[in-house]
Length: 268
Image (cartoon, rainbow, N blue to C red; front, side, top):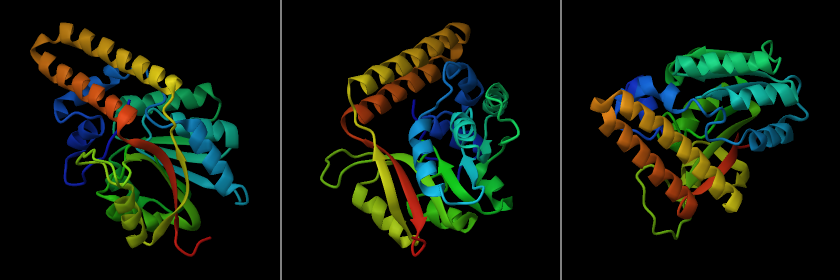
């Protein structure tokens, strides 16, 4: 299940719908039901934990900001495994309620704070962090140049920005309005005064393929249940399912999924 790019010109509802691969903002009230079988939503917490450990090992009590945190899987597991303080923000109240319950379950409530809100507005009142995470939601404030330019002031001098996203190789014939070529992505990063310090790409094997199929089947099952309960909205749920299928197929054949680490130039 993939969360995609938000557009800062859209309302919060429209942006979340777009992030969940649905153009219809009417899907919003139904997302908690459709995604009830998921805790980890797109990003691999263990990959992110490995990168956080690698780049914060010598820092004194590093702080983590998880923007678009979903149900809190990344923050809760970072707190549980690394003992770091995390602030997670997401626009769906039910997701935040779930994140708080998982923090309690993992006994890290004192380390994890979760808030409901529009991350584009919430960021304005925050301090600097050692780690900022955009997990599987792409550049939420516009393109990479705009996003990194906006977030850079909230990153400490030697801090890292972790982005879980997809791109295509420069020679690829695949085209998608929200997916950049790798070269263009890196150019925008450089223009923003940052550089890629590390990267972990997903190798699509049979295990990944099987997991994607299980995720897709869960989405289909819950969507079909909603179609039966709300037949007048069946078209909206059908469109959502089809969009998810297209996304999974793109990740299988065309898009390279990568967890990227960005740092300010001159901070190494």
